[in-house]
Length: 327
Image (cartoon, rainbow, N blue to C red; front, side, top):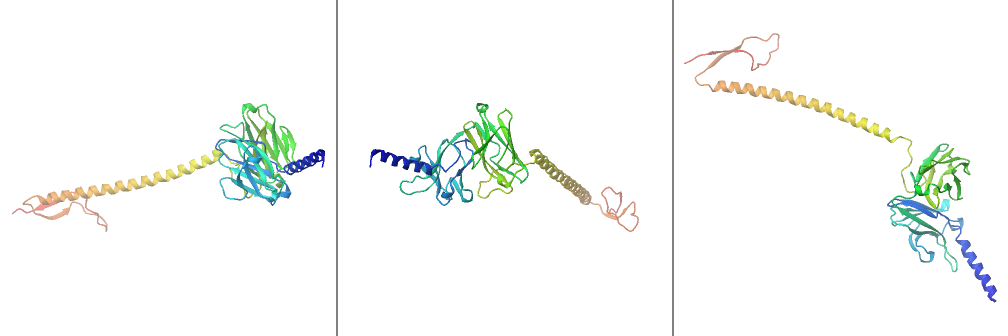
């Protein structure tokens, strides 16, 4: 075989290998808040639905170290969603920037695994972020996603893109492939908003905000939250102040009831204490009289008589006439 033939065969083999790795898709440069979390969607070709999926760390594919396989226990959660030809990698928390790979294990002599490279840019104040990474809306309704960017990216191109077609909308009114209206507006004050109205079930899935070379993934649910996804705080149509006012009203009501009950108990206790003191005074007076020497008391009568059939108790203050006999 001539040298030329060998070159053709080699180039053909390289072409086959390269063609095998083109099906895997994901983001390229994901911005993450230091100590925060992020979920990376990795899309693969239909033919690799049954192949093992894994998450690999390292700049070079040949030397990267496998962090976790899909659907196995470990600190990094990798979940395969074969119905959507996709697997997700949930990273929480994230503390350092680095190079990673989404991959599907193919195996076989001379056959490369299906893989794609991405980079995580981690910082205390990322140049791109979102208010909510998971947003849920109702069919026929609308949702709003707010993407925040730093002053360094104010003049960069802003986009709202979707998996798996990788179609993007810029800051203008456009239509999605499902005919749901999408409005993207940039206020020029470090945030741009994406409003999707007339939602359909087919609008559910993975999207991302982008500013310049940075990207942040966002998951949209229409109706019930998609199963198998990490739970995140969702948008709420209620105002936080409404809940604050309600809590204050409930707390005030409980405090008022406690004050009323406390006042009643205090008054009863005070009344009971007064009666006790009066009884003790009477007892002391009688005891003092009894202790006097050489006095005999007889025929004790009240100066007034109770009326009716009731007999009123004798008070210490009632006038009493004592008749005494001395020996």
